[in-house]
Image: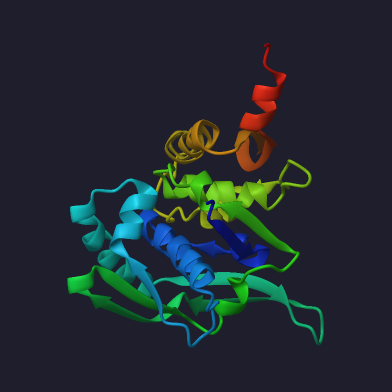
Length: 241
C-alpha cells in the first residue's frame, strides 16, 4: 500500500533548512497521523518507530533509532519561514515559526515522539484541494535533502509542468542551502542542482531539466521543466506482444 504525503503549497514554497533525516522524520510523522486515524492537531503527540524508518528508507535496523533520535533533537531547533498576505490590507508578510514544540524518546521501544507547533499544523494536513500530494515511495530512495526539496517544489507545479523563474537567492533558501555553502555558481550547480536532478530522474516518477537565466554574464535565476514518466502499466500495455 502506497503512503500518501500531503503538504500545503505555502509550506512547500517556504524557505527552511532541514537535513535528510529530519525531512524523512516529518514524512513519517505525517504518515503516522494518517494511518492512526488521529490526524494532526497541536495536541497530537505523534510517535515514529525506528523500525518504520529503517524499513521505509532502507536503513540498518541497528542505527535507525540513533538516526531518528538525533533527527528529532535537530528538528526541535529548526524553524520554517512562510509568506502570506494580510487579509485586512492585502500586504505581503512573512512569519518564522518552529516545526515542533515537544519531542520525546522511548529507548526500550525504539520510539520517538514529536508534536508539531500550532502554526505548522494548518500547513500540514490531509485532503484539501489546493494541496500537493505525493507518495512517500517517490522520495524514499533520494539520499540528498536538496533532491527532496526540489522534487516538492517541482510537483507543486505539476499541472503546468514548469516552474516560474526562481531568483538564485530565493532558490538557495528554498532548497535549504546555507549562505556560506557553494557560493561559486559552478559548485552550486554541481553539488546541488545537478545532484538533485540526477536523483529525481533516476528514482522518482518525473524527469526534470533546468534552464539558467542571466543578467549580463551573471546567472541570476533558474526555471525547471519536468514531465511524468510513463507508468509501469502504460509501458506494459504499449509493449510488443
